Image (cartoon, rainbow, N blue to C red; front, side, top):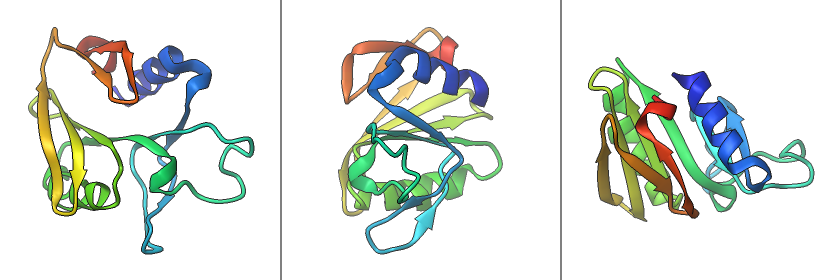
Length: 136
C-alpha cells in the first residue's frame, strides 16, 4: 500500500510537488518528526540544504496499524498546531483513510472519512482527484 500511494501521488502531481518518503521534517520549535510521506512544495535543492518546515508542506500522509493512536492523538495534533494544511491517516486495520484539514492549535477542525469507492482530492490541488483504490 505505501508504495502504491507514493506512485499515485507522484504520478498525478508530477512536477507540481516533491514526495518525501520517511524523511524528517523540522517543526517550528526545532524538533523533528518523520512522517511516512510528506508532499512538499518544489524547491531547487530538493531539500538537500535544509529539512522541510511546515511552510513547505502541502500534505502529510501517515500509515498506521498498531501505532494508530499515536499518529491520531500525538502526531496529528502536532501537524495541526504547526499549521500543516492537511493530513491523511491510512488506518490499515479499518481499511479507511481519514482526511484531516483546517489546522488549529489543538488539532484539525475537519475530518473526512474515505472508504472503498470514494474519490477525494488534496486541498492544494482540488482539480486532481484520487480514488481510495489507487491509494490503498
